[in-house]
View 1 (cartoon, protein in one colour):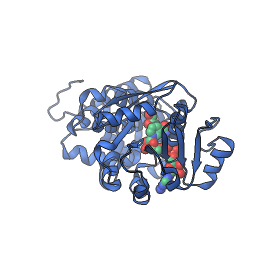
View 2 (cartoon, protein in one colour; view 1 turned 120 degrees about the vertical axis):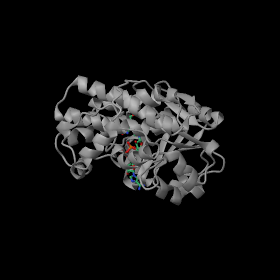
View 3 (cartoon, protein in one colour; view 1 turned 45 degrees about the vertical axis):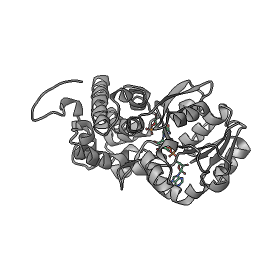
View 4 (cartoon, helix red, strand yellow; view 1 turned 180 degrees about the horizontal axis):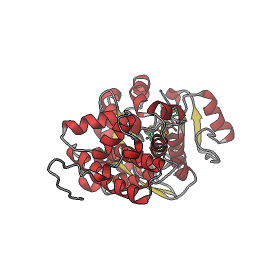
Length: 336
Ligand SMILES: NC(=O)C1=CN([C@@H]2O[C@H](COP(=O)(O)OP(=O)(O)OC[C@H]3O[C@@H](n4cnc5c(N)ncnc54)[C@H](O)[C@@H]3O)[C@@H](O)[C@H]2O)C=CC1
Ligand SMILES: O=C(CO)COP(=O)(O)O
């Protein structure tokens, strides 16, 4: 039996630990707070993050990261993206040698503009063929309720991707594999920005045409950015691209959609951050992704307008990124 470690006991870390335990792995979950580890072990609940969900017997929580990591065959990391480097500084010496290290996160590090797999390589000293990333249409609460879902596991090494996919699989969760780490990671990061835009127009009160236009143009924008940074175009049309875009942009369970909605209703960025109980990664990704787009000369009208709303330079009701082509001043209006 595989022994696995999951670091981070928020909504996705706890849900993914349940996925792994239900797939037969002996699963240890690190919770920063001892009270949360105690609640998970004693009542099989994580009430703050997963209301009404009963966690499996094969999952044990602990607030000591070193004992969670001891003897692990695979390690899964799931803290907010801005906290990953500090976590690795603390624990990387306790990660067993040679085992896969997997990012479940969907953000970039704002100070360095690095993807999570790059932070794992740099701060954790892990070789790229041991690193994998998981992404896809994966709203935590739906999966915790065992609603059938699929995801992508990507690694430079297909052996690593397949080993992780075999562990992250059960009767309600299927893992597909690929070797496009860049596309799989950027799919998860960039859909958050489109979800913010769609949340904003929903908050303003606009209807389905506006949202469908932004979603479709969002896919084009996300694809151009990711391909310019080395992703495969096909990845953006798969589960980690289009799949996640659809799930996140249409669901009140999405924190990014919800944060956008509050912006659309007139709350400021600071108010939104204060009201969110959980991490909305898109808010921290706007600036680094805008800088990366500029570096590769990719036009991103949706991102630009979300940024303008966040900075208070555009009123939410004026947001209409689907009415610009991204190709001005040439004025060409190709859809895809
Ligand atoms: N919730 C979801 O549906 C999904 C989330 N993700 C990604 O998973 C990552 C984590 O998100 P969630 O679990 O949803 O967030 P969350 O807000 O539900 O939980 C975050 C967890 O990290 C802990 N934490 C905060 N600061 C920390 C620190 N300095 N050191 C250690 N732990 C710290 C918090 O106590 C909490 O347990 C994000 O990158 C998110 O994009 C990916 C797929 C689905
Ligand atoms: O990544 C997710 C769904 O795939 C979760 O989205 P949010 O972080 O917006 O809740």
